[in-house]
Length: 487
Image (tube, rainbow, N blue to C red; front, side, top):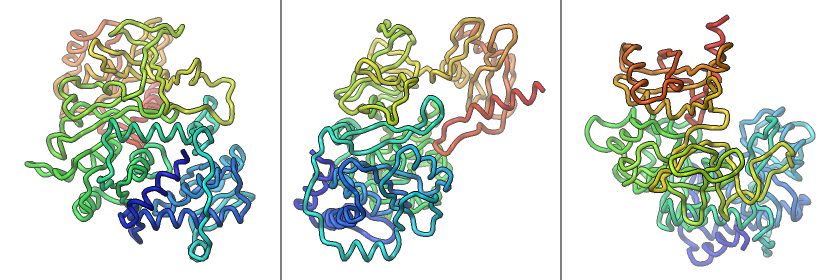
């Protein structure tokens, strides 16, 4: 099946139900399907044919999903692009993926030589005047979308998803996360990126209503939108969760009406997990996936206190294994390399990268170390580049971080390797604390719970940990501060 067929069916059987709402307009499912058909006609007139790559570089609004559906109808390939990219970034993407056409946000500078149409008033008038495209290209194993990532050499590459792959990923949201046809989902993450697109598109394909927030919002705007539109599902990164916690009252729940509050992009600190459930909503769901592996594991509301620190158990139809360096499964409780397999994993990498080892023997290797306990719960132990090799012994940063976070007075912790002439690397810990701490007490606590070679030899207290837009700690910045101190 072609992904666009799902919305076409909703356009027939849920014709008058709101499909997408943004700050300017509302499209019912019938209107969304009609607009996608008209856009398909315009794209065909511009020379777009099956297999061609089409970029959408737009601010979040009703026309992004409409363009994606139009491209799918034609049998072409979607390339989501960030509308904030500079011309140099656009040129780099264009050189690698060679889009036939880019639908670009009006008023933005476009890289010279990149074939683009401005998403302006002329575009809107042309869409309204175009006849509706009446054909549907084959789906199934044809390519639906390219999900951008950074390759082993830092050069942009994409995980290739067919209609069948992406349909399986949407089904994981429906079956395991609980996305339903009656949902009113508030999208606060840019849908050009996988973290923002996942639940948003799954809601739309299921027949729910997608509400898109305008850019540059604040926490109070999210709270107001949830009340105004009677929102019942939302997905956020930890940085947005922290913004919402700052708005939460001392007593009661800030977002008691939410049926589902999902977090993506980074693992929550234990105290943040508890605070969300105590002050925002108890209906917290955390799920694990990757750009190439799809949706893999889920932690449901009743499991957080049962298995703190876990990313959950595999979703329906997912296999997760922990293996050693020779790809041999290891016993329960032993840390090794995580690999996963499902119908929702990528078909492959484009452009091909001989150095890429993320897909082999039918498994996807997302780059994480982990272990699985006797009950089948998965615990991440860090990225491949998040392992500290101290005197030939592997130290997994998340394990040390969990111990530090259980120490009195420690609010946040980040652990990384510091270069050492004697041992190769030393264990360095950066802490955000509740006032002054006794470093000797921290070390005693670590020695109680960790083998000697895992105990930090460097401890630094900081006012806050540097984070990126997804809420992940930028350890490179912390490592640079260590280098600066040693100079």
